[in-house]
Image (cartoon, rainbow, N blue to C red; front, side, top):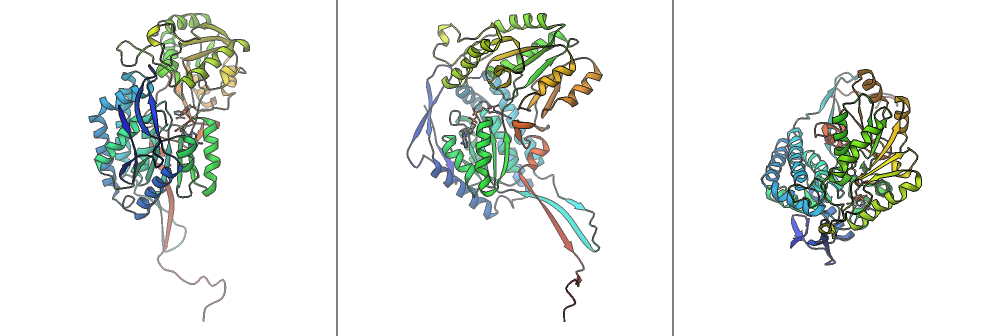
Length: 493
Ligand code: NAD
C-alpha cells in the first residue's frame, strides 16, 4: 500500500489533525493508497514556508542558468522514473498506461522547455524620450504561487504550472486533486532529489474547500493558478480578491468539432473518435460536440456508430484496452444523468448510454462509449460539459449557421474543423471564438504553443513563452544620468 505525505519546508509531514484519505482505483474500487488529508492549517504552514523561501531571495537570486540546470535535472529524473510515474497515473485515473506514458514524455519535455527558457530573457532596453537617461524593462518573479490542479491529467496539469513558476524564480505550493495525488507526490520526491532549496517546492494534500481555499484566500500568496471547473474557478476568483493576487484560470470546455462535406471522410471519422473517447472523454478540450454537414451526415454517423461499438473498454493495464473507466462513482452518476436526460430534450440515443454488462468491469466506474444524434445547440447535453465518453451530433446546412451555433456557448477553449477549401479555412478559423482552433486535426497541443480559453473557459495562458510571462512581474527601471532641478516650485535657496 502506497503511503503519501505532504512536503512542507523540506520535510515530509502528516496532516496536523492526523487525518488521512484513501485513494481509490477507478478500475475496481480497490484502495491503492492512503495519503495525508491536510486542512487549512497545513496549507498555511506551506504558504509560510514558501513565503520565507521567496523573501530570503535564495531562489529568485540564484542565477537563472542555475535554476534552469536544476529543472533540466528534474526532467531527467522524470524520464528515469517514467514507467513508475505512468503506472501511478494509470492506477490513480484508470487511463490506459500507454496514454500515461505519452503524458510522462510530454511532462519531461515541458520541464526541459522552461529550463531552457529560464536564462533567455535578459530584459529590454527602451528608447527613453528623456535626455541623458536609460530605461529598461525587466521581468521578476511574482513571489509565492499557489497551484491547484484537477484529476483528469494530474501530473501534466501540475507540470504546466510548476515548470514555468520555478524557471521564473518563484516559490510554489502545489495542491493536486484530492482524488489523484500520487504522481504529484512522486514528482515532489524527485524535486527533493534534485535539491531545490528548502521551501521552494511545497506540496499540500486535501480537499479543495480546505487546503485549496486557504491558498486562494491567503494574503501571503501572490498568484493563484487554477485548473478545474468553472464554478470552482469563480469561487477562487472571488477568494483571491482579498489581496488582489494575480489569478490564472484554465477552466472547462465544450468544444465543437465541425465536419464539412468536403472533408477527408476517413481521417475525420477517426479523429471524431480520438477527439472524445481518449481518456473516456475526461479532457477539457474533448471534441464532444460534433457538427456534421448534411451532405455526409448520415454516412458519417453510421460509420461513427460502427467504430464506437468496436471500442475496447477495460483495464488500462491490459494491452488491448482502448478506453478505461471514469474517475469516480460520483462522476459516473453525473455522466449517466446527462445521458438519461438527453432524449427528453429531443436527442436520439444511437449506441451506448449505460454501464457495460461485462461482469469483469462491475466494480469499476465504467460507462459505454455513447452516441447521441439529432441534437441542437440549445440542448443542455450540447451546451454543458459532460466530461465523459459521450458524443452529440448536430446536423448543419451552411457555414454561416455552423459558425454561429459553434460560437453560441459560454465556453471558448478549443474548436476544430475539417475541410479542403482554403478560403473556408481562412474565414472559419478567424470566425471561431476559441483559444485554440485546429484545422484538419483535433486535440493537438504542445509546450511551444500557448493554451487557454476565451470567455468563461478561463483567463491567462499556459504553455509557450507566454506561460512563463504569467509567472513574472514587469518592472520598468528608469535612470537619470544627469539630474537637474525641475523648478516648478521655484528655485531652492
Ligand atoms: P474541480 O473544479 O472540481 O477541482 C479542481 C481542483 O480545485 C481540485 O484540486 C480541487 O480540490 C480544487 N478545489 C475545489 N474546490 C475548491 C475551492 N473552493 N477552493 C480552492 N480549490 C478548490 O475540477 P475537477 O473536477 O478536478 O476537474 C475537471 C474540470 O477541469 C473540468 O471542467 C475540465 O474541463 C477542467 N480542466 C480544464 C483544463 C484546461 O486546460 N482548461 C485542463 C484540465 C481540466
